[in-house]
Length: 297
Ligand code: GDP
Image (tube, rainbow, N blue to C red):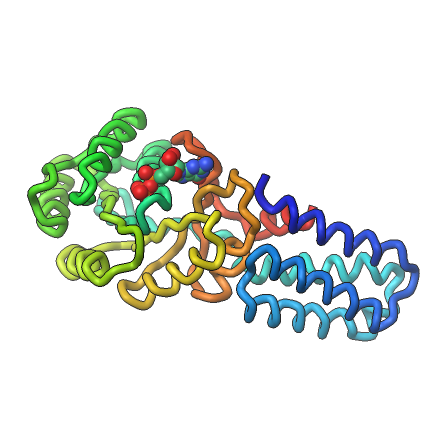
């Protein structure tokens, strides 16, 4: 399961803290050193870890906490609160226009991150909410991606707009917008092409779509299993094309937690959803407080 190792380590630190009646400053510092190591081992961004432990320490060494009835519990509470803050505190919803307008979601991400699967997952969620989504197959470099989107769209009962692999993505997207307007669709979800690595051509393609179509939200799909790489990818995409939110996939695997804990703090962009499996229903809203509870056990 995700975060197992991190959770176990943090729980050990907390068990030690709880067992002490009174806490000295040195006790807190020693505990936070352990927390720091556990976070670094979980592949949390170095700067984020530093800032996080500094904030916890400043709050924990305040006299109220140290003189509290149960100082260990207080420190744990502070760690929890700071962790929730790290992940953005509040749940961020997808920004949808009113139903009589067309919301355009552009899905971006590297190959294998789970973009095409997630695109279909989102369509299902929006359909459940009473929206009429249209999926658009703009990944023209990987013909299998077009078929995959068609198959998944069918499973979700959502129409897929495709023009094969001979047209330019921007032209497919434009045609899809016309189709959406005629067909009464109110959400257009564009599945764009990924690459194995960030490259200029991919970015240029995404920028071109954004220049020609009024994209409501650009959503980046990243693989939680890749840890800090996912965070770096998010930073680069934001810089090059501008992103509004992130979906973190494969959180059902044995990911260490680094991406979930760093993305918001490093990029300033919220995690909107998390992918919890390969099935099309395995997409969950992201709740910073629940995630912190899960990690802290
Ligand atoms: P794309 O290249 O980014 O479009 O990636 P795909 O959508 O083709 O997904 C790549 C692989 O990851 C597929 O085998 C998906 O089933 C799998 N996948 C996607 N999301 C998740 C997830 O949340 N959990 C798990 N376990 N697998 C996922």
